[in-house]
Amino acid sequence: MPAQYANGGPAWQFCAELDAGATPVVEDNELPPIGTYTLTGSLLYDVDGTPHVSWNWVMWDRDQAVSFKIEQLETAYETTLEAGYACTLSGVAERLQMRGADDKANWLIYKDACQDGIDAGFGAITNPQPVRTMANRSHWLSNDAGKALMIGLRAWGGGLMYLRGQRADAIAAATDRAALDAINITVWK
Image 1 (cartoon, rainbow, N blue to C red):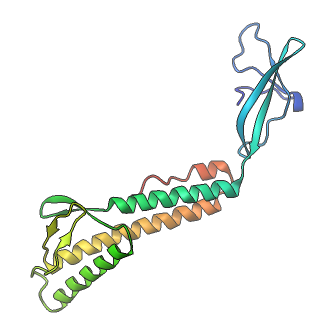
Image 2 (cartoon, rainbow, N blue to C red):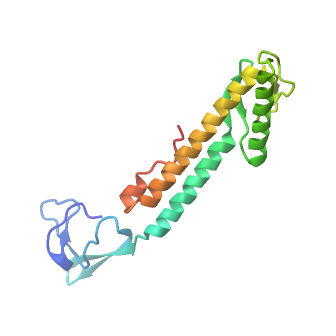
Image 3 (cartoon, helix red, strand yellow):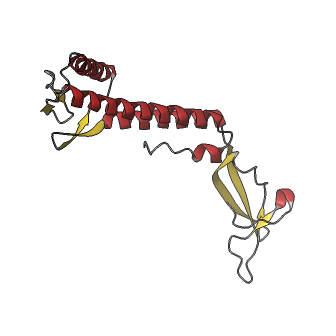
């Protein structure tokens, strides 16, 4: 993209760095509206001793860009889920797996088992089901501690789902390239 522009319609001129005695380059096509085209290349050629440049532009396709950004969002979301829920169990840094529907169902079953123990007056008693981590370690927790862990897992997963939805809405609403590029899909906090 030229550093400086001179008004002049189809034959506008620029000099990227204007030194004493620099020869202006004649532009053979107009600069398209900002954000609507992508620069793909240029052709520099000589016409009777005067340098000319012709820029090659491809029209920016909003629908294609939105579709690509949604794909990136989904990949980032799934990658974050696959990394698991970070927690500390028995003084050890652990992660709980949340890759698919089976994992989610298993955690719901565990949460319900903890709730049943609490409802029966056994909150401080160790739940007979261990918590199995991504590192393949088992931890036996009290029903109270197990339920608290599941509340944290639910808050983490719910927060990710909220951010995913919020970002998907922002992507769908983006009307130009700058708005689309400004949507951060890499930070999930």
